[in-house]
Length: 435
Image (cartoon, rainbow, N blue to C red; front, side, top):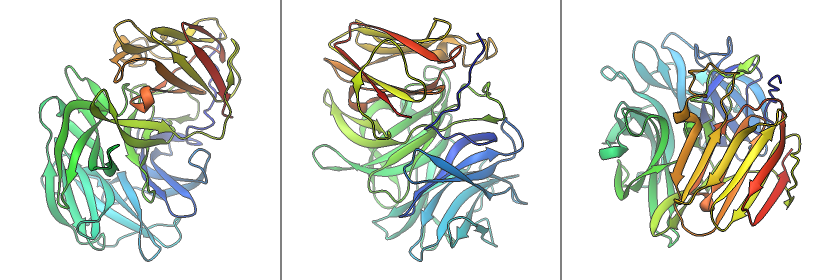
């Protein structure tokens, strides 16, 4: 059976070429902007540009061209966007050359960007890794701040005009939180269910050993206007339990934080034709208490839909399954070859597990086919009955459970199309057509 590679309908993919990290996510008051790391010349990682797309709903995107091209300072690595008081849009990005330097570009219309003539605005003479500036409005200082990945830690800078910057602090994690390399940090502000403010530092980090691979995690604490300080939860908080989701950042300009991430990190290169790379669905973030502990919860942004009783046959296009069970269950999604390409289940030990079948569309030793990347079993954050939502959009699959404290984005390449399902021990199983 040949591999039918349906381009996702709701997960952003480039028309051609390669994409990885989402950059400059922004709501400007009238439309959403998405930029992404982009190689327009090939379907593999290469000289980085910033691809630009816009949307009215965060789900259906229209490419509008390339916003930033490589220059004499370097390739265009990751960064962020901001809407300024005078109506201009600003991009802050890393120029990756002999050294990684922080630069800015401005636009009056949000589409044509002019780089600042005296870039870089934050120079770097010492650090090998110094990248991915994430802008945020510093309410304490009444100015702009940026958090920047600096090897094994992050650094904070402040500025009134995005041109003149001053370092204000740094944060280095300890213990099992400490990865070998920070990437794509973000600082956002949430409230506990009791209404107490909490600063959340999110990061994509490269690990070795027990917590292997490229993983997204979060730290909970406070921000004093100069730096982040971890004050809550010594437990490792994953933003995603799998390995395909990486480099997640939030939209600027929204009252509540919404995150998107690169959703093909561990599985690349992909067996897609003419393009490579996809981004996750937008995910709303909030804090909840689960069995007494403070945790991040995520809710996917979906198009309007209605739930109906699920049958054995699966629809074409994007769809979601919602399952409720009082205890252990098993859900299998089968392809046209009759094989279970994806299995999701809860076991007697209180773990939520997933496995995708190995695929000959990838090399046998690829991350896609290795057991450590295609199989996960994670202890549940809550006890009792379970509700799981599985979203399938072409080869993009996202799974949410336990009030959003469990989130898992992964790629699954079935043989042919999704065809039918098997489910055991579920109290209720519903389906919603999303496209």
